[in-house]
Amino acid sequence: MLRMETIQYNLPQERIPRVWYNILPDLPKPLAPPLHPGTHQPLGPDDLAPLFPMSLILQEMSPEHEIEIPEEVRQIYAQWRPSPLFRARRLEQALDTPARIYYKYEGVSPAGSHKLNTAVAQVYYNKKEGTKRLSTETGAGQWGSALSMACAFLGLECKVFMVRVSYDQKPYRRALMEAFGASVTASPSTETESGRAILAEHPQSNGSLGIAISEAVEVAAKDPNTKYALGSVLNHVLLHQTVIGQEAMEQMALAGDEPDVIIGCTGGGSNFAGLVLPYLGRKIRGQCQARVVAVEPAACPSLTKGRFTYDFGDTAHLTPLVKMHTLGSTFIPPGIHAGGLRYHGMAPLVSHVLDLGLAEAVTVQQLDAFAAGVQFARAEGIIPAPEANHAVAQAIAEALRARAEGKQRTILFNLSGHGHFDMQSYIAYHAGRLENYEYPEEEIAMALAGLPSVE
Ligand SMILES: *Cc1c(COP(=O)(O)O)cnc(C)c1O
Image (cartoon, rainbow, N blue to C red; front, side):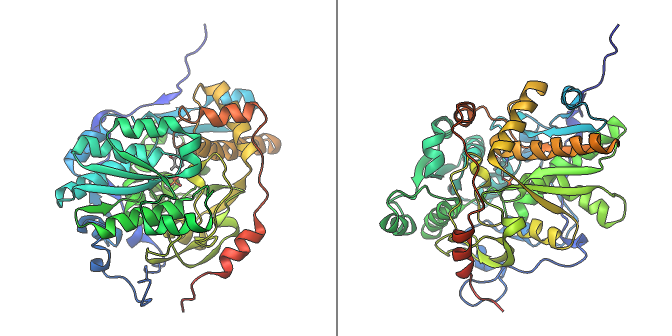
């Protein structure tokens, strides 16, 4: 008889984490502060008050090691958390590798990705402080879907600027947001000054996250009842995602295993940070030896090719200056199908841990990412989001290296979302219509030449 092997490590509902883990006070060197775009002085909480509710601003700079998750947020988390941790046994067999591969699967959330972890928290605090409407940007549509759903649950209005190339590539994402009651506009749009300025110069613009952020920030800055919500990059967003890593640590203990390498794809850095920050906390205390690897697309390589310096978070320069790995805020990345990875910058916190040598970064080409995603789907039955394919590709590369070296290795990666709304990109892949993009050297050099000078 076949022995039944464990492939799924599940936690009961009461094991949904009670706190978010804040790495800020544990860092061996503090984060560089965000600066006011006009004065270049460090920002105070009041500077951000037009855009965010005070509770989120305080989380952004919190010195506490742990922040309690409000019970109402945990109740909503209970719909899909704790998310499962799988052992990828069929993939291991297909790769004929001695490595053990585990993945934390965030695609079980109703919005289809990890983004709901922070969407629910952000809408909750906004509601508590009287916000009536949230404005935001979305790349591939996952963040917009998550925020729309959280707004529907908690009774806020939602206005989404969706990057033009994704708006055209992913109409079902737009339909999902509209089903949740959100209003969705393709960006750049004629509704804002920032959008009109871009369209005047580039009428056919594909859009970018940087442009869509400018539009959403502008809308919030001009309306006292509207605040702005960001789906990645900021400290409080990464904080909310630490439920992923805390659960994964418990689940790896259930499996009786410890990761040697931990992998996440990086767009703005939030799913990666969510999985790895709790492990990095241990690493800082000398309790974890794992290598930590961020995977980014070759077409938009902020961590591996960007400069670690102060830059704007958006194209129209409405946001504060933050110190991060950046390709320049005017860089418009090629229209790769992993829309959630098309951001010119990277979370300051992720940039910082890389700079401290606590993590490393690699790039993956679009075709290699999709090849890995298809191989994974055939073995595990889950179609990964194009963004998550980058993490899958790196996990497979590590497993094949373990085979070549004849070594055991425990690999843990974040499967940040499913690709059910991204099947158009799989159609294009199978029809041979996807291409790799060389590193867009000239455009990046131009964008980097325009960096603000901050000393
Ligand atoms: C948004 C998104 C990403 C990229 O954003 P991060 O903040 O880097 O996580 C990756 N995977 C999925 C499924 C996403 O929705």
